[in-house]
Structure formats: structure tokens, C-alpha cells
Picture 1 (cartoon, helix red, strand yellow):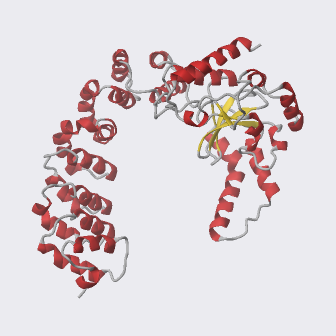
Picture 2: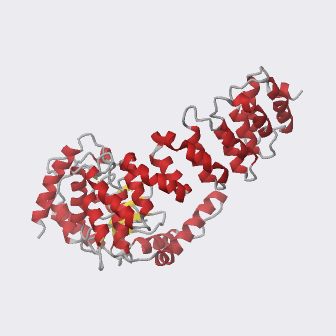
Picture 3: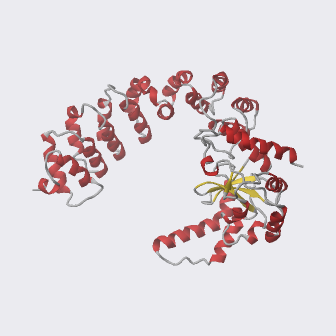
Length: 461
């Protein structure tokens, strides 16, 4: 039934290996596109009899067909992320104990499961894991016995065969039974809600992986998130986004576009700009797409946005236009006195202080007296970049008298390399104020005093 597709997959495996000869696809250095020998019918039957289940047909045929009969059998083979687990080891990965009762048990997961449904479904296991962690931290006894804990784990992950690891707590798994048998689902054993792959069978999911390696979509793409988004070229996704009136489908297109490799082709810019012109809800998203692809094309939109939504504009500039900070110094300086949000202040401060000769100090100094403590702290961090710090010695002296330890530490750190004698009385006062280390005040003060040839003990005399 699947012979034609399996033949394509076997050919595409060779093409993928050739396309990614430097192993730039995430995880490829782990599996190196290796193929184990195909699994025998006898091995599959033995597995199915042991666990009292029937493997989904496409996956079963994959095991019987795909492989290199002359290869050494190792733990991982070619596949998404760190590769597929060797068949012998798959069931051992995230089912506790032998997993026997749980592989054949009904899978309760579905692509339509809401956040609330997942939270209710996984709550007992989550509470058990929290209790286990607390017992470990407090060196007390974990009250659940192994069998009860395994049963809670098995209930959540029943009917799933682990296929491979994505790293940390994340896996992809095959649904073994029920309405969604044969589909791939992404699992996080830290109990974030599972996410089904869009493909309706294992074979389509696996072939799509090979297609995206061959096309270069996954090669060197640090935002690649294979298996979590729908398939489609940038052009197809942009077109589908415009054509559909279904909000979920628009979201699917949008999420997939975000994980494509940048920069986008210049031919797509008119379409992106057209969407920006009519779609108010997703306008910021598409400006970001344009900015990640072409600063020149995005700049006019940023110029308008920085007047309408300063917070959003500086966020975009900081993330995706670092090389162009100089274009925004004056407009950001003009807005600085209005800032009350710490994140906005940090980003705006970076824009104006990371460019040579930007004379940013005068707009930062007022923040050293801000009632919000982290604003004061970050103001001194920003002033530490100034090539004219001695001209603002009074400002730093004020910081050396601040009652908050984080601000005080930032002021001390910001004075690295400054040996003005006017600072010594304040350094000595700090040494006496802190008889022992607190919040790394003394370790930083020690460095400043060393430039005067003094130790902490000498400064206290």
C-alpha cells in the first residue's frame, strides 16, 4: 500500500544526506543520517505480541522497508532533531517501568484538546511530580509508591510509542491506537500540553522532514521547529494567510512563517507590505517579518510605528536592527523622559548607548534618581558605557550613597577604571557600612579600592 512512498523516502534519505553534508540541521550531528538494517517481520511480531498491540500500518512498513541491510545497528537513525530511536529501545524512553500496560492502553490525547482539558487531565501527575521534587529538596520521604507513580505517568502517556528526542524534556511519539492512530505528537515530559504534528501519518511526517532538509529550509535555520507547524513554502503560506477567513488557519500560517529561514526572498516583500496595509491585528507581526528580511523595506514602517507604539518599535529595533541603532538615536532620546516601563528603558538605553559619540548621558542621568529601583540600577549600568564618566562624577557619588544594594553595586561597577580621589571617602564609607559580604558589594568594592592601593580592611581604618 505504501510502497511508492517508501521508495521515495529511501531515495530522499540519500538526497538529504548529500544536501546536509556538513550536518548543519539541528541534531543531524547526532544521527549523521545513519540507517540501521530494516526490522524483520519476526521482530515486529514479537514486539506486538509482547505488548499486545498492532503497530500502525505505515510505521510498520517503514520498519520493514527503510534501512541499510549492511549497516551496524546503533541507537539512533536518520530523523528529526536527534534522530529516531532504534526500534528495540523506543518503548524505554518516557514510560516508566516496563511500559507493558501503557503501550496498549487507549491514547487519551487529541489535537483538539484545550489547555483547560490538558491541565485537568495531567493534574494528578503534575502534583505527584511537584511532591517528589519537594521531598527531594527537603530530604523527606516521597509518599507515593513506584506502582502508583508509574500508573499516573502511564495514564497521561498511554498509547504512545516514543520515536525520538528533541532535547531536554521533549520527544516526538507515535499514537498507537484510537482515532489518531499513526499520527505523530510532540510530547514534553515536563507536562506542557502535547502538540500534534499536522501530517496525518508517520510517513508523511517523516517525508516532510526529508523534504525540508533537501530544500535547505532546515539547514542552518536556528528557529527551525520541525513538526510543530504546517508545511508550505513562504509564498504558499502568505497566499493562504490572505485567502482564508479562518482565524486558526491564519495563526497556523503565521506561526510557520516565523520559523522559516530568513531573509525571505525579495519577491515576497510586496505581499508582506500589502498585508501590513490591511491587517491591523497582525500588522506588527508582518513588520517584524519584513525587518528580519530587509531593514530598507521595513524602515518606513518602523518610522511610523515608533510614533504610534514606542514600546513595540524599540523591541523590534533591538531584536532585529542592531546594526542600525544610529538611525534611531534622536527619536529615542526625545522619548526617554516619558518612559516608565523597565523593559522599554533597557531597550531604549541600549539603542542610544551602543553607538559611538551618541552623547547619551544627559538623558540617562535623570533615571539615576528614579523611584523604581531597577530603573536606577540599569541607569548606572548604562552610564558605565560612557567615555566621559568623570564629567558625571557627582551622579556616581550619588549612586555610591544609594540605600538599595543593587543600585549601589551597579554604581561601584560602573566606576571601573576611574581613580579620582573624590571617590575614596565614599568607598571607605561603604567598606564600613558592610562589615561582611552582602549582594557582592565588597567583592566589587575590593576591585575599586585596589586601584588606590588599598584593601577593604585598610579602608575601614
